[in-house]
Length: 307
Image (cartoon, one colour):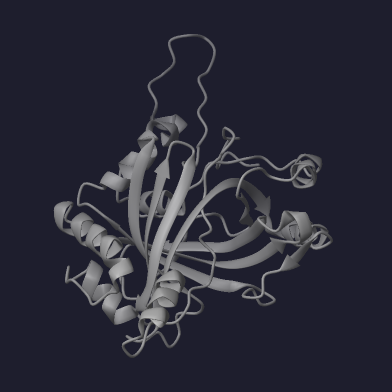
């Protein structure tokens, strides 16, 4: 690996951020239909995650080896699918700093779109998500809404129509955006390929994210010719192992055999720092900016990606 990052501590925590959302609701439902709708539209995930930085040229071989024990996700075509997320934060970047400081409990709000951004309309389905970390476990709750409705909720701070089962979530989103004065802060996007476990490994999911980009303006998903920037070097991809409880022995053996290093990385943090929205933490100080060392032994720093 380059000086772009050093090996991180064992990263545990995570989410199932890759499940493809359903479609928005339509006409007023019956009581039975409403119960089913709540189950399909209001999702909650609680999973552990291990992340590895993998050179793109090695990712295909690793994916082929995993394919001997796993299946391609039905929602993941050859070449993968786009994942685009708009993150909200306070003017003082509270959520960013909570991640930098490693608070044991922290939350963040985002709107997520799956697929290409070409042709995004007000009716396109998106997910409004609250992702939170509790100790070492990351949990995620979300509802699927038309894009225009999601913007009214998060940007215009309006209470949208919702089912009884979604009431608490919608009110939590409103409470966050109003109390903390949340604003659109950064967009991230990448191409994702996903595999799912079979047989006794049905809770296992592995994703490969490449072409990881971001931007600090033009926050509408339908913006034409947006100015995106790579926030992770384009020759590298992020491999994520997601499990409900414990990773199977054979997949950790594969990682060890291929010399893969566990990392702590946040695409949101990378985007914020790539565009200079916040000063880099002490772990990101360039060596040439440090005071001269007092001892004869040169002091050396390397850059770290934060979870």
